[in-house]
Amino acid sequence: MHGLINRAIQCFLRDTYSPEFWERIMQTADLGYTSFEAMLVYEDQVTFDILDLATQALDKARPDLLEDLGTYLVSHDSVEALRRLLRFGGVDFVDFLHSLDDLPDRARLAVPDLELPRLELQQSHEAHYSLWCGGPAGFGSVMVGVLRAMADDYGALVFLEHGGSREAKSTPGGPVPASEVGPEVVEITLLDVEFHEGRHFELAMKAG
View 1: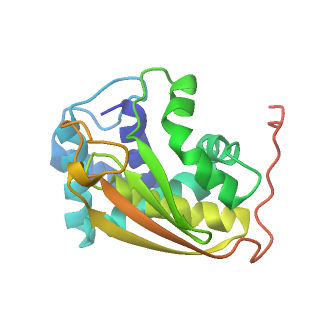
View 2 (view 1 turned 135 degrees about the vertical axis):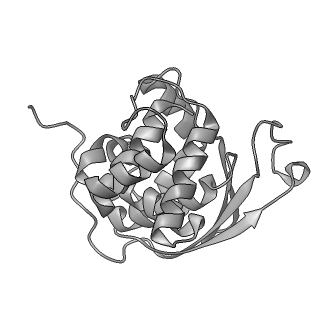
């Protein structure tokens, strides 16, 4: 797993629950270090073990924790860069949805060795979409949180539902590589794309 992903989990647990909570998780994991380096690559099992320890400590289901992680990645000030990357996808929530297919490629422009799971948006009618998410398992739950936070960011009212996993053979556009688990599908129903005023966003970053 890319260090950026592990670092995001670290920041989420630290900022949401406390630095002391994060320290306890890492002490229990007994990895020999207490922090992830953003530019390193770690064994996938390390990531899954950290998530398991966190869910056990919090007595929380992993999908719920991952959904909270997705919301954090968009809404917390310490990860503003991801919000900017997503907001560049369109001027409104519908544009944003249609930009999701290209998100892994846009992420690689910023970090060439960062491989995000593939995303594929299917539209069944004007107000309903299905977002197919490749592995690893649980990425669909992260995307539910991301979509919920982005809808609020744009001022849209949406109904989101995790539709579970599907066999690779039923995936739109062809089979998913064996290295991926899933795919998972997130059902998206647009209720009002201009429900309230969205969060302020400027294309140009403020000078430091």
